[in-house]
Length: 331
Image 1 (cartoon, one colour):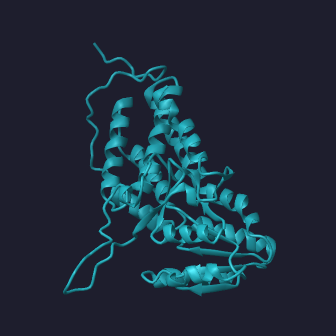
Image 2: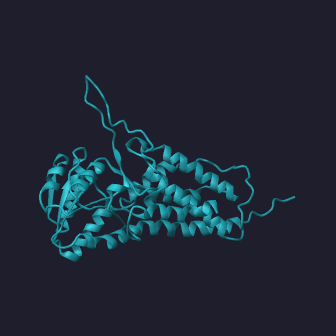
Image 3: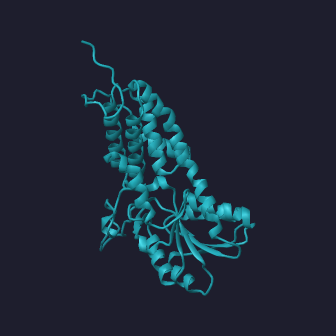
């Protein structure tokens, strides 16, 4: 008897053994995407990699597709030191995949083609979200204001560029240089100055002093690699201490981040980020080694607002959004 045609309506079909080839290299695909397009965020690059996977690897059933996406998502996350940003992307795409499979009717092949067509649109919308962040947040800057920032967040740079166009550069930026990433800091400062923004460069050790200078810093705006479920952020190491200093000086601390960086993770403190960084390297006979791309966790009580493409929100907005996005998985 021929096998029944796989359809998608109501509940997902019964699991069948997976026979999907696994020769697709999602890790190299991910890195090639990041190298080819510097505007891609890590979550979006992960999503694009999974879409390439669906385009390349054949599958005949819903559960083969889900198993393949899950397996390659795990492989991709295991290949990097900090899997949190990738988790935001892979979880979001998997939810989108399940939701689409439940809602669409017809043959599995038709559903799969629908996913591929709309998956591209989904990823493009995530990329466009950065422009939405800039539109929502540039008015915070204001003429005559001074913004302190650090790192190389493209959301923050885009926001400041949008402000520079509207205010003709009539505001200032204090840029906190990263001593371990000289070329990156040089690049960010050069880019901001080319926008007509006056920039003062300070070392990390000078942040408390600069914030203590009366009326010299009006706000802090930073980016994030991931925004956690409780409204905190995982970002460039040093963000946490800047947030603490801003709170002490009663300076607003804003985070510019797209909603595709929201991740179902609830850290309790620095020890609960979810992966090991080995920041403390005790030695008596050699220089201490520091991890590359180290991050820290900034809790929501130190964050004034999140600037997203959906508007300026309080940290509690993240939990509400994730509940709406992932609630259908249990529905």
